[in-house]
View 1 (tube, rainbow, N blue to C red):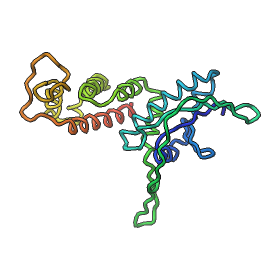
View 2: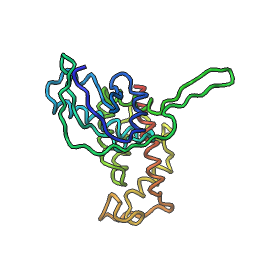
View 3: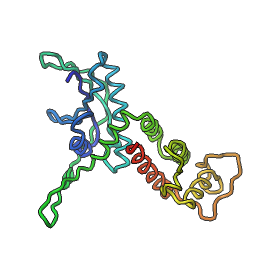
Amino acid sequence: MKWKVRLTGNERGLETLAESFTDDPEVFEDDDNFFLWSSQFEDLEDTDEVRDTAEEIVRTIRNLGAKDSLRTEDLQASHVHEINEDGTEHVTVRAESSTVKMRAGPVRVTTTDEDGNTSVHRPADRTYELTQLAAEDDKVRELVALLDKGDDWVNLYRIYEFIQANIDGDDNIVDRDWWSSNEKDRFKQTANSRDAIGDDARHGQERIPAPDNPMTYSDAKALVDSLIRNWLEHRREL
C-alpha cells in the first residue's frame, strides 16, 4: 500500500461501509480513523491525483449508498496519506467537514433459520458491488455524475431520459415492467407542466396541461429510485 485517503462522515455510515468494502476499493479503520484504499491509487505519484481519484470513488459511494439507505450523505475524502518504504507516513492535509459521531445498533444483521443455518446481512454489500461496477462501466459513472446534481424535478427527468436512452436491447422501461405505461405518462406530463408543479417544471414557457392526477414529488422520486435500481441490476447482468 502506497497511498490511503482519510474519510470523514457519519461514523455509523463509515462502519457500515467498512463491513462490506473489504477488497478493492477498501474502507478500513485504523487508529480511530477511517480510510479508503484502491488499486487505482498505486500507480499515482502526485497527491492531487490521488485526491481526485479518491473523490471520484467517494462520489460513487456517496450517491449509490444513499440509494441503499446508507448514511453516506456527508461522506468526504480529506487527508491523503503517502506511506513511505520505512512505514512512516507523509500526510497532506486539507480543511474537512466535521465527522458526525453516532452509533446505534449493529452494523451487520445475523439471522438463523429453523435448521440452524446462519446468514449475515451487511447493508453496504450492494453498494460495494455497484462501486466496483462503476470502476469498469462508463455508463454507471455517468449516472453517478447525474445523481450528484441532486433530485429536483429537472434532474429526476434527466435521470429518466438517461436510463431510457441506455437500456441494452430493444425493450424500454415499460416493456421491462420497470414502470407501467400510466406511471411513465404521469411522470413525464407532471415534470413538464407548470400547471402541475409551477416553477419546478422543466418547461417554463411552453404551456403543457397538468395530468388529471398529477404525480407528487415524493412519488416521482420513489419511481425514479426504482428505475435506478432496476437499471443498475441490468448493467450488472451485461
